[in-house]
Image 1 (cartoon, rainbow, N blue to C red):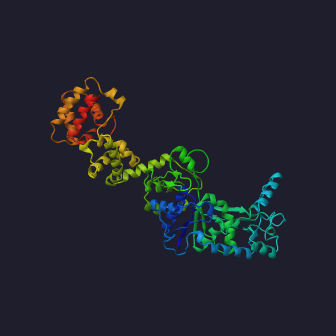
Image 2: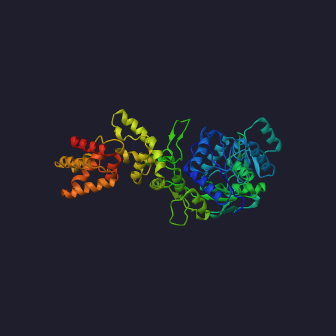
Image 3: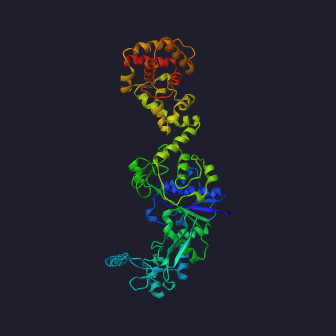
Length: 524
């Protein structure tokens, strides 16, 4: 496929929803698969809804996901500017061209006048649609019923107006359709005579999405428009605009919706708040409302896992493989494998993906991520004198790496590491009540004292050696494992959890092992 150029064109009105990130990802994958160009354009025509820090958030989110644009603001500005607010002169020019060619017209209707028409229609059980049925009946005020002189006088006076597109001409008859072939959905068509005359240019001097979108896509030489399903109803207007300008339309692709985990409708922030998961890639602080929204990054997700699960929301490779690197996604991505039906968001599956990526991470990398968390925990512990100085190991990355190696298979997030490994860094301050009642019997202190004697006599204090010596002692004394091993674990960990017991003993060392055993005898 030659000269593929795709664009992601979000509005800076708030944090970028993962549905938007999924759209950006599919554009990116399609571009890279076809040696094309991925463009980021900021569609800021709705000045009233703009949020100051939203544009930066968009760039930061795509960067974190590893899918940066090839062309955008300040980068390879081949067809810049890339903010629509900086391209207003173009939109005004082409709005005028549509008026001059008879494909659009000025409309001076006030809000009150339009409200009156809507109410009048409702009283008759009808729905008001501004189109060929009524635009020239005399009740509406537009350049189709006013003389050129009246129109110019109104404009010169500063009367507010919009420019509307003339979607259908009555002389063309009814049941005329307009459509295009969607690369996912096949041929889609709409009846022109039931569509309204959309506003293209607003009274504030800014274009609507529709006009700006078409003009920008044309002049930025966009070959494929890959966007969400919610834009499918706009297809007839966009095709009609391309036809009116005499421009070749790009190929269209409308991606399926991302649906909420349960029930009907698309995934929203409210669903995340209710069910306890983020719907944004990064945490977002709204400077106006002071509201802070959760992000996948801050919740502990790896960007690779987010990209992987987003790719599977609406697309599948046709194989059993589920874990894909970004390069693998580029290699295997094919629009023919994108589904028409909506893709249901599964919070449990997103965690599964993160768990898989955590297991694939080098232990040294995970240890680096764990060290700041560990340092914070140790600071808290130091304040209450609970830390065991002999095994603090706060700056010992080798020690932390060994700990991570032993516990990571039980973790989904790096933030899980502390609950899984705290006993490697500090002695238990309490013991699980249920386990204590079950495992610590009247004869247990005597057995643990004997175990202390066995461990004290050891020179080779490694996991395998400890295991062999302790098992030999149990066999020699004809002691059941259940009498000694559970209390042993309880003393070292404080609960009946953790990795291989003898690995724990080796890691914390002989002196600390014995100290914990002696403390358990005194405490339990």
